[in-house]
Length: 137
Image 1: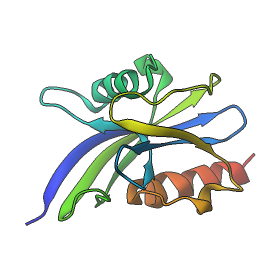
Image 2: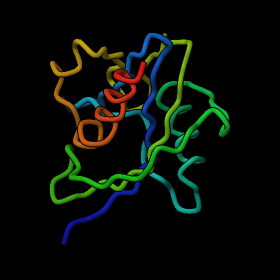
Image 3: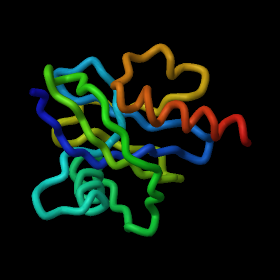
């Protein structure tokens, strides 16, 4: 039986339309910022905590827009599913430094995102939404 990890994640974009990706230490995959929901936390509380821990980014609940829920195979853990509640956050301060378990923070553009190994959650859920938003601009 597969294990399930419950996550809260953020599809973060900047004013130029670039998409924020992060890469954990020891992983080749780029993913959305966020992390595991701890016992007693709501997804929004978990995401606010994770953004502070990983990026030293302080956000308020009203700056986050609910996008949906998606479940897929985890890229860094075998026989494990990730079940994520995903929010959108628009930033005008794109200078972020990786903290905690993150090794890299990378803004990707519509032209270069396909050159990176992307986590399933990002590739299956957020990238299609992001590309759809580009077409509507």
